[in-house]
Length: 129
Figure 1 (cartoon, rainbow, N blue to C red):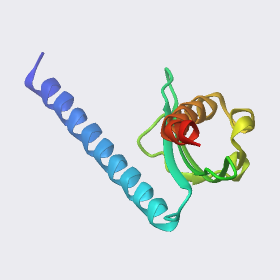
Figure 2: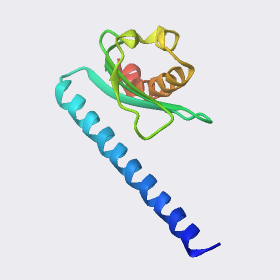
Figure 3: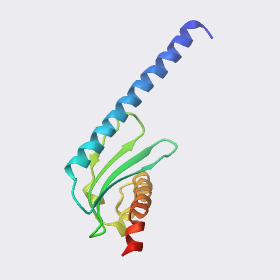
Figure 4: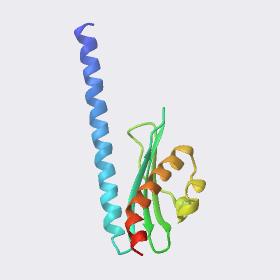
C-alpha cells in the first residue's frame, strides 16, 4: 500500500468519524429538547433502536403511563449519517398496537425495543399497585 492510499483511507475514517459525531450531537439535542417540552408527571420518554444490514431506525416515544398510550413519536431511519428525526403522528395511540402502525420493518423493530424499555420502567409500579 502506498502512502497516498493510506492517507485516503485515514481521511475517509476521519470524515466518517466527524459525521458520526455530528449525528450523535443532533440526537442528544433532539432528546434534550423533547425531554424539556414533555416534562410533566406520568410521562415517560423512551428510545428504541433497530439495526439492519443496510438501514436502521431509532424511535423516540413520549408515553403517557396513565392512558398507556404514545402521545408523541419521532423516528430517524436511514442508511446514512444524514438521517434526521421526524415527527411520526402515525405512531401515536395505544401501546398495544404500536408496532402494527409502524411504516417500515426497521421502525417496527425500534418501536418494539422501546416497548421493552416501557415495560421495564413501569414494572415496579404495576407490582406496587
